[in-house]
Length: 374
Ligand code: PEP
Ligand code: MN
Image 1 (cartoon, rainbow, N blue to C red):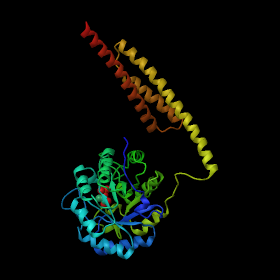
Image 2 (cartoon, rainbow, N blue to C red; image 1 turned 90 degrees about the horizontal axis):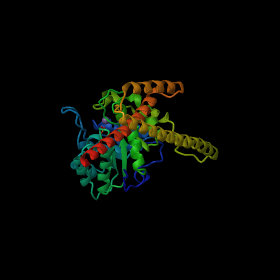
Image 3 (cartoon, rainbow, N blue to C red; image 1 turned 90 degrees about the vertical axis):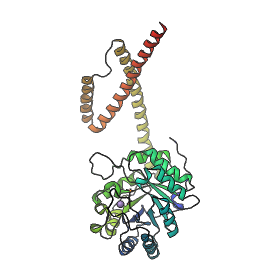
Image 4 (cartoon, protein in one colour; image 1 turned 180 degrees about the horizontal axis):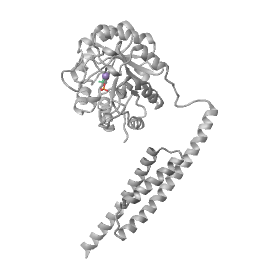
């Protein structure tokens, strides 16, 4: 899938000199004091580029704190005046967009629940027509890359060129250490489809727990994401929303200071030569793996034909168990993880079954054709 987004570089709408780019602030604006005091402490760290705060909060159940509403926009403006930090809020309706624009909010973001609904995204996009404001689009709650891309396209089609994606993880039925599964492949896939699109990681909503935030932040930087959005509250223990995942501004500064910044490339010739050598070896091995796979599939085809001609079922569970068992112990001896080997074998096995099914079905078509021509 190729996606064509008309976007301006990140530097054109947000200060990128600080490493890493950091958007921070409370999950929710609760009181004027809480927001302004948090903003001051964040600004003092010297590590924060923009101030975030939820004004309208999407809550799973009614009766929970649903955001302070429009009055919070005034508090955000005061925080901006006093600290110089540009502001960003979540918008989920056309009315939110109008109010945020009228209040002079600098950057808007579309939340995960909104991205999952094309009607909502379109309503937001329509309200943004003719406006020049940066918009960040969070991934949808469910792991659906196309839905994420669709939302980015809708906003971009409305004429918004200052665009970024936010990776905040995906909801999953399975129990996990994370509040939202990171599913890094999806974010990497988005990067591959839209290379110029900046992706900012939101380790707070992935983690759901402040202890995991450093790990996810480091991983995001190692995946070459362009920045982080982290929830920070002056006193997380009394936060009205997402208390477990918020960190104090001081803890945030420490967390950022402990991250290792790695570059996607270097100008050091010696390092580049060594890397080129290693990559060369990888290329050769990959070619060999593919060649061997093709050879394996040719044998699978012969087996398929043989099974068809002798009326033997495609799948023999015992044989599959034996393969799985033998190969995983061999792989383990060679220091490959069992999880990896099992995944790899399952992939190869399902392709083998697909090929054999094709052969069996072909025979049926041929047999039916023979019948109809008889
Ligand atoms: C938030 O950023 O506070 C928020 C509600 O996030 P998400 O849309 O990712 O759940
Ligand atoms: Mn939150």
